[in-house]
Structures are given as structure tokens and as C-alpha cells.
Image (cartoon, rainbow, N blue to C red):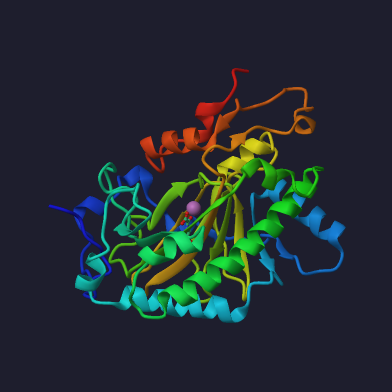
Length: 339
Ligand code: OGA
Ligand code: NI
């Protein structure tokens, strides 16, 4: 039988067996603390060298940070959340028209992570969209809710601007010219995952998303204000990143780890869900162009070790990523040079 979305309206009273993780691989939620020190960086601040320094420290020590004063309008943020929530409230029959388990599709609603391959499912539905160039992809986006295309496209445009700014700051924080990273990444793709985690009867036995790193360059996550659920692996322990008003959570993806010659880390993170309330998050991913050659600039190789990773194209990387399981191992390991 084909799987189907779990955001079907009726609440589940028991967790279906196919979602139950083995004892050794459960979230152990009582052991998770809140990450008090996640950097919150005011990137609208006039002192650019201060911002660059803060970004550099955050990337080096955490791989995760939040940004405020980021230039994405409150209106765009509110509207995208409203229309995304409205999308998931639609009747299951309406949503299933967009359902697909084919990861090569550029627009689809799906569930879990890779239902065809995985052994245990995840308590998540997600709408996945390609967002750049907008003129090319918007046409295939959901026609309902009626305001979907307008609100989501506006949001995508603004988030892309933020992504470029962050890449410039990150580039400078590595001692590079501000354009260097953007030049290496080429004409970047932009994807969006609207993640919806319905109320779950047994949050202790399953994940919304299991621990993973993001395979792309940079992720800009809108957590929403009310429901925490993103957890990050920090010094071997899972910690929660509490939502901060008007902030985005930014994380370094595998490509920036490779490009920075391992100085900046693509950190493991996961998402959990709750028994009594749904959670939604909106992730925007900036991805190198397929033929971008991911290679550390020479000035970053002067660490006595030379290049940690061999050069590769993003297309090559993504193919490897997709052939593995989300939570198996760090795909980047497969591209390491011999020590
Ligand atoms: C993702 C992700 C976290 C969240 O979509 O890659 O890590 O909080 N999401 O939903
Ligand atoms: Ni992620």
C-alpha cells in the first residue's frame, strides 16, 4: 500500500508500529536541555566588522546561530506562516492530489523522509518546493490556498536576499573577499520544505526528523514563535534551540563545511513533535548550482593538513546523499582525502 500523509485531520491514538524506533535510537526527551548560549546576531547593526566576527565565531564554535534585524519583513514572515498552516489544514483528499514519493520531483507533498527506502518512518509531512528561478517553478506550486503562490513567492525573494547577505558575511569571516563564496556556489538553487509535525501519540518513540546534517550550502529556518522542536547536537548532547521572536535559525550545510576546509561545521540536528499540539517549520535551503566545483580556496588550506576533502561537484555530492539514508552517516565523510 502506498503511504500517505499523516496530517489527515483525525488524531492518532496509538503510534503505528512502522514509526517505532528501536530502544537504542529514541529521543530520550527528558535528557534534552535548552541551549542557553546559541548566538543571536544582530546583522542589521552598523558595525560590519563586529557582525563578521560574531558570524565567524558562531560558525566555528556552533555551526548554528540565530539572526535578528535580518531585513525579511514581518509581513512576509507572518503571511507565509498563515498560508502554510492553511495548506496543512486542507482536507486530506485535497492534499493527496499533490502527494508523491519520488524525490526527483520539483514540487510534491510527502511524508517522513524517504518512505520508499527507510526502515522506520518519521512523524512528519512536508511540502517541498523549488523556488528559483521563481518564474520557472511557481506555476507548478499548489493552487490552493488561493494566496499560496503570492505569499510564498514574496517570502522566497526576501529570504534569498538574506541568504546572499549571510554568505557574504560568512565569506568575510573566513578572511575571503565577500563575493568568494557566492562565486564558488554559482547560480544557486533555492528549495523550501514546509515541515508539518502533527500531534503524535508517542513522542518518546519516534522523531519528526531524525538526526541529520543538511546537504546544501546554507539553511534559513523559520521555527515559528510558539513551539520549540529543533534540537542540535552540541558537545555530544542534544539541546533545544528555543524560538526567538523575529529571528531565523541559520545553519551551515555540508557544502560550506567542505568549502571552509572543515573550519565551519555542518552540525547534526533533528526535530521532535508533541502529543498535544502540531508544530510547523519552514526551511529554506540555498544550494550550489549542479556544476559548481566545491573546492576550498587556497588560503584556507594553510592549516598544515592541506585539503580535508577532495574537490567534487554538487551534482556528484547530491547523488551520493540521496543514495544513502538520512541518519546513517555524514555523507561528507565519503569525500575525505586520505590522511
Ligand atoms: C530540515 C530541518 C528542522 C525543523 O528541514 O532540514 O532540519 O525544526 N528542520 O523542522
Ligand atoms: Ni535539517
